[in-house]
Image (cartoon, rainbow, N blue to C red; front, side, top):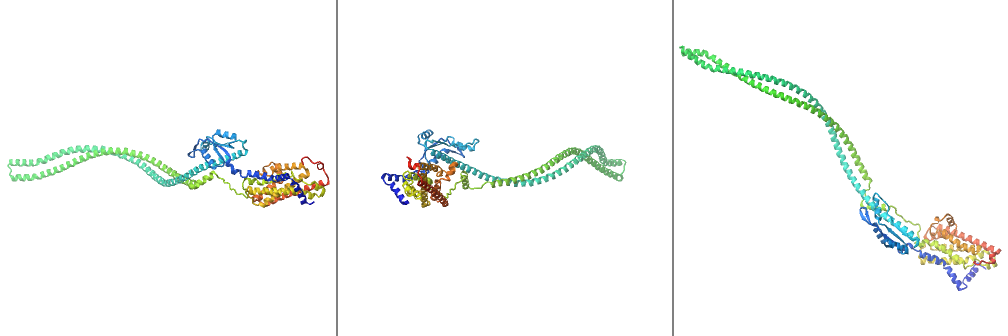
Length: 631
């Protein structure tokens, strides 16, 4: 009997009655029902989160934030409801607690009364974090609690981005204003520097002038001291002169009196000359002299009268001169007295001038020293103003000179500095497609395991009749392998047509499924050949082990070390990896390597099955003579 004949005989046995046909069809559909229903239920759960009821409790009282009165709680609530990620219900705290208890809400998010105030506290002396309260009830759904935690983190990130962006814009605007003010201050410092340069030049001129003044006042001090001494000498001489002038004036006054008397006497004599002439003429006439004789006598006497008149003129002139001399002496005496008094005043003034000149010289010296110090200080101020100007300009240059739009963009970047650039080498269509490789592989194992509940691993009649372990083993493998291929083809049709999953490489994907089913059939066949019903149980244990070690959900690297080691050995992990490569368009070489591992498992299992059948052809065991009740 050849392998096709043995396959046909087994197939006829499986379809010999209606109930066997129904059982066969049911078992063939096990992978379809398991994989299809599970993946259908989990096809896109994240796309249906809007149906998840969530309580939103807003207790925020609002506060002053960035110069405005804000209520971040209301803003967040409005954004969440508008976003529609979940089925948000704005309720009070009591209603949220009741809803969590009776399952009306999967979780609750509470924004407390001090929410905005806590966010605004960053600008106060008591900064503290704002709290977002997440209340969950794992009795409703554990994953809902996990999703709630992720949601709160997203809310936190959104609020942080908003607040930092607004605060950053305020800061950048302030920096822009500071930059403008620094430039204005730099211009003022430039003007100050220019003014100080001018002031420095003036201070230098003042210093030189003050030095010149100091030299002049020193000369003035010495000259005024000499002047005071000279004026003192003059005043002393003038006092002596005044005294002498007084004596002269007194003498000339006496001389004037004498002169006045002499003048009066002379004037009397002169006045008496005509009378004397007339008296003489009269006396001569009385003496009997004739007029001629009288005339001769008078003619003799007339020159004497002329001389008397001339003498009187000289006397009167001398008197006049003496009078003028007396007047001049009096004036000299008066003037010398006044001059002496003036000389005293001049001496006092000269001494005052000397003292003032000394004080002026001392002040001029201090002025010269101060002017020098002033010039030095102004030059230092000039250097400082220049350094201030340069520092202000350098400081302004360090600040960004951006327009309003650029500052707004910078603030947005400050609020959300890191963006995620998603560049997937391969990408699953959705959540269900992401799980499809794992559940398709698991469904293949379950399908083969279920088939071996009704399929005989080997034909004992063929073992006894043919004594050909290879043909018997291959025939025992062919039936579940072919039925498993039907299972995988049906499952592939459900995944591609009914669920609409996209396959980068459809035929290689189907090929991997067929290879996986054939491999699983060979493994369970070998277990049954060697261990019988115990082997069937071991197949169940292997399924459980591969369920946790295949890396179908979480990365296999997260497994404990013993289970991670099993991942490297058991075949289902290679089925999952190969499915991902061909389904998502990954690395073909990895798929070929995985397929090689599966082929090795299949060939190894078939070899073990052949060895088991060989053992059965040479000797019988108690299990062969008295089969187990369960196998």
